[in-house]
Image (cartoon, rainbow, N blue to C red; front, side):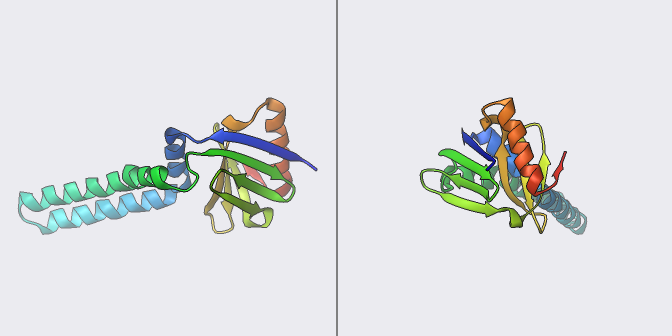
Length: 158
């Protein structure tokens, strides 16, 4: 049986980059909505107070979405800052930490996107199921083995 074991402790910058990657379409939609709302409020108001208020509101929403909410999840999320052990094999992926364990079956994975730092597993509804950090891979041979296990189950897109 092909099995790859990866261990790592997630850092805040990695989590932040993963959040942006995982929610890119949601983030783009939020930006469009905030900008449209701000434009409408700025046009509807015939004084500078409305325009300033709309700008502050838009900036606040963007700041909350891109930094505030992920920081709260990072600080309070179960297992976020703990050492993780991933076991990836023919049956699926098992992620274990001190306080959390979950499993992903290959039937849930539609495709995998590979970046310089991650393997991003997408579900059937184009949602991100899981992100595998390449930093935790111990050797080039293990990375080749992981790529082989992933590619046997689902297509890898670069």
